[in-house]
Structures are given as C-alpha cells and as structure tokens.
Length: 156
Image (cartoon, rainbow, N blue to C red; front, side):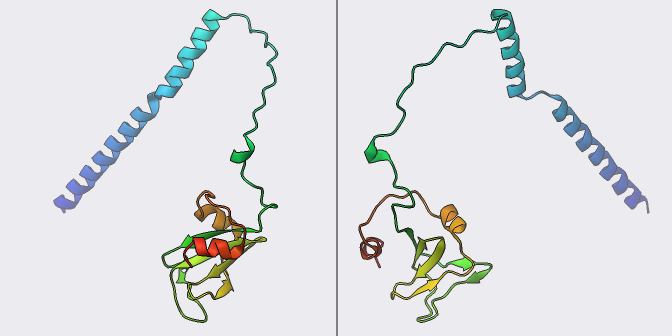
C-alpha cells in the first residue's frame, strides 16, 4: 500500500517537473524572434522615414535554351527504373504473366502509370497514379528519341 502511494507521488512529481520545464522553454524567445525584434529596432532608429522605391531595370531572367526542360506536352511520357519490389497498399505487385516481383520500369504516359517487367510484359499499375510517380521519381536526366531507346537505356 505504501509502495503504491510513493510511486504515485513520484509520478506526480515527475509530471509537475516536466510541466514546469515545458512552461520555462515556452517562455524563452527563440533566437529568430530575438533577431526580428533587434532588426526592427535598428531599422526604426536608422531610417525613420520609409524609403521611396526606385524603378528597377528589366532583366532577362530566362535560362539558356539548353537548360530549359521540355514541357509535358513535348514529351510522350516519363519512365524510371524500380529495381526492388513494388509495394502498393501493402501488397507486392507481381507480373500477371511471369510472376516476377522486382526489376520494373515504371512509365507515366498520358496521366496513367504503366509497369513493365524484365520479360517485356506491360500492365496498368492499379493503385498508382501520376502523383505517386512524381513523388518517387528523381529529376529527368536523359531524353530519348523513342520508347525502345529509353527501355534500352534503363537496361531492359
């Protein structure tokens, strides 16, 4: 009986100490808040009147044509290699023809996602959409003239 009371008292003491610690940390201003306050005071002291904005010369900020990525309209689609197992909604996707479960080429064409296994079987990726493809694909590094060139580049 006394052991339970002592343990309950110790738990309450620990909770109280934790609450005090968090209230202390919440009361301390963050370094960014301190910098913002100091910067505001310095600006008010140094420049009592707001400055009039001067017109800025127009600058051509477009990238050179070699650095501009082609738009989605100019490309037929995007593809990426997926070497490991592909898990969608907790299930491993397997090829319906040859039962392989890894080493995919994932294609994003016209708003749909397609899967291609090493044997060349293609199927619609149910449960996959272009948003999933965009989240999981890296930056576009290569551009290919044909679908077969892209497949060969990815090693299939």
